[in-house]
Length: 115
Image 1 (cartoon, rainbow, N blue to C red):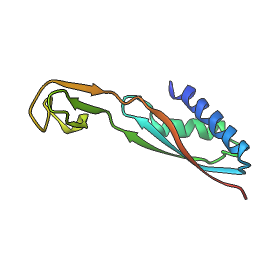
Image 2: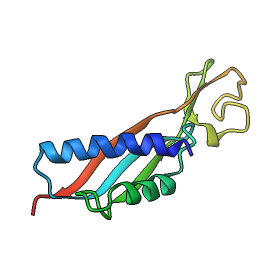
Image 3: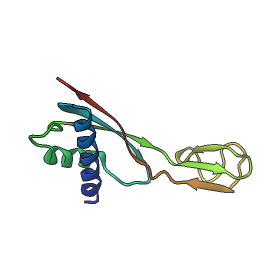
């Protein structure tokens, strides 16, 4: 249910930008979502479908790219995604690691037309 608030945020941002740029129809919203956000892109798209009926976002598609959290080895400086290791640095074997959680939520770009 926490997708509702973020969907309202996306809707308001996209609608405002579309109006400022004289857009008649928003066709696609591209999102960049950190893997630690726990947002479900399909639910965001469903909420947007309901919110945007009879507006310039009516029928909008949502494309979400998941940005993975990174792990930094404090000993050798290697950086890798958290899915690329089993508790040890794949480069030097160290367990002295720091997880840099990715909690980004970004409206990356909007595809629209001015027909």
